[in-house]
Length: 282
Image (spheres, helix red, strand yellow):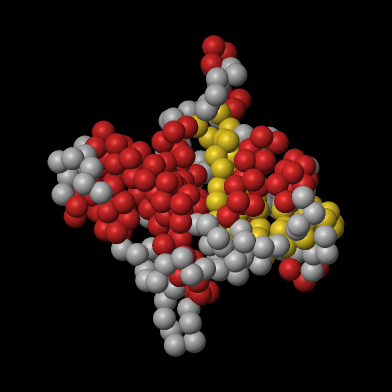
């Protein structure tokens, strides 16, 4: 990686954040596969550290949490017998916490769909906020204890559970189920029913699947190691938060803004070169 010029590093990163796999990035840029992988890992760590330090003291009012599935190594059902129980193989879940107003991805957690990962996400979320917020999650029960431990009574919290059914004509394999209605449940505090919603964070799931090749379904571009997977997530959110203007965040004068700008964390749209610059002289 040290042999790449800043311009070629930026070219590699542009490919990765636009949904290209490592192999396609190699073909497009001419960089060696090991070089691309090393850049992804080192820059992913740098992006994680930068956002961990910068995304603090946030004045969010409404936060949405969700989980999105992916896999590392192979699907859960295809794990070889000798690797059963091995950490970082099979199903992997990325937990996210998003500001509904600024679209900022406040924090995330890569792990299993269990109570431990839920607590890690919610505890990190609580540490980054300055005051009481309204929180919406899906109906995953592990959220309840995690929110109570992290926030106590200082939160307005509701769950949104969507009811799904199937239509007679939707018999094809990849046709999604039909949502027949949501059920809103107050858990703590006094959440405003008008803002009990998961639309924005669920739309973010699509952005993740389009922007990170390992999240694309029905391909062989899944992550092979958990550490590299986590680095890809950190790089994606660095680009999403700081360098990718959000269509819904334009000002009345037409100025493009990123989620970080809307949240008061940044004063301009970052370039890919600035993101690469987080590596310093490495």
